[in-house]
Image (cartoon, rainbow, N blue to C red; front, side, top):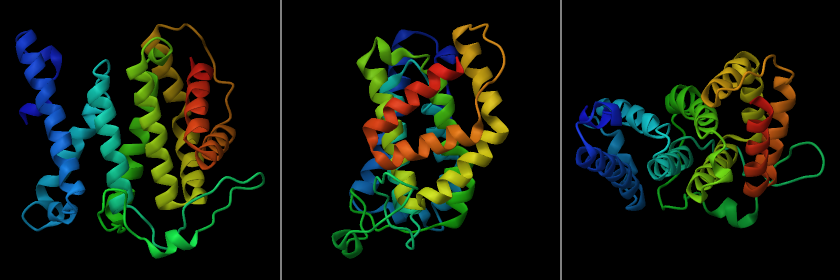
Length: 244
């Protein structure tokens, strides 16, 4: 797919600009389908076989720093996809608590099973396991380290982190805090060292060793997600500083 090209494979500045605009247009087009309450059309027998490569392409766009505008749009689409196709109808949205992570569902939320963009929520198990947990959430950690702390100098980069927080909030709302916590513990238990190495390599850090407990990192992150977007943003930035 020509939209899979990177800046390194383009011939010049004009072509780079055109390619960047095409990428953003693709993301906005898919987002527009959901805004028009037509998301299910992507699951039709004709379109479904073509959906996975398109979504894989969007995942690639989310990592293309320093094109932070495209990254922000891609991660925003992740939130819509999670809410629309990965919502467990048995899991109420989370609310902040001072004790163990708990959840409650307001009367208004009980009466409204529609996403912010108007598409009916549903649960597609293959999408949850294969794409949400298999692609989206892991790539968010790559995006975080790939930003290289740029949020300290650039407001647009900071917006990418905020969009990541929104995406994680959508995940916990759709799947439940306990499920996300369980997944985070397992995934970080196997991949935390790799994330740390990736982050240090990106900034040329010579820092060695681990020193982070995967369970503690997972619990701290999920608790922050439950407490709110602002706390999630702060915790993501703190996590980045710890690993590099």
